[in-house]
Length: 422
Image (tube, rainbow, N blue to C red; front, side, top):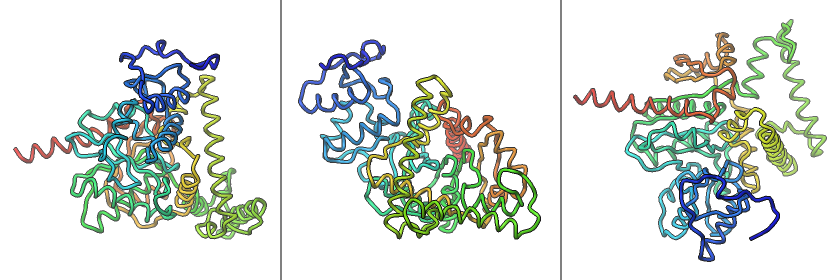
């Protein structure tokens, strides 16, 4: 055993299971991956990843190492159904394993259960890794699936339009659940993917049973800039603009600034937020690296604040959105950069009559007092429920509040169906 590395003693964790020592070379190899990543002096075959203190960061690193070890793809979210070393070895030994035929943009957080499945859409990062306390809000019989950005694993070309992403997610959902009912939950920016999925479903004669949107807002990009310009606000000052010309000047300033920033870093006069920016290899490389650096910087800040016991709810929220997820592969960074471009350029105009459930923060609830807010214009029949003061509190994973709300929708549907049958 390695000495003087400051490893945490396993027996100090108070685990509920007995220690089963790894014996075979493969068992020892996987256990060593876990031990080093989780900073433990020993890991047993039946020790639960989450009981050992695992989070989205360690899950991402362990998934990469296991994928390299077995030469087959292991996703971080697979740890929800395979949280022990023994589970992972069983997965590797099986010629066929559950979930192997799932589309690459869809992961099973919990594939077993008798209830209709719930499909969760990530936030702005393009990835989802919920905390165990969030998952605890679901019934043991509740299957739960989560989407991830198309192309994250390098299996396909990343998509850069929300409509195209929604089409891919709908295709994946219908493979798992060909006929209704369909229950969808979406976090933050991912709510706009859900809206486009609902549009597509309605165009195909399909109706979602329930769609819960957690604190969506005007997307940071074309949607927000157009909204602010139409409201006549000068950035940061709240002063009325004298004329539409002045509003257009404001938007032109941001357009010029983005191009100037791109020119400085790449030598190319491009709007790096535009879709055609990726046609230039130097610009595409810079955008991708910029996105990865932003995530890693946030990761370091979250870990530092967590170590200092500051804002514990922040880390839990970021674990949920998985902003700190794995950027070790070029395909992941590229796919998530394109996801940001898709969100930036999305600005739907057509209203929807679907009855969305909006769980919003107090700050978002205040924004929605404006009848011209994009949410009010597009989601005309939304049921608004206030939960939490801030965005982080509302979408956070430090409680089961949101998952219980979605679960109630499933139970309510089951009760209604039974009433109809009787």
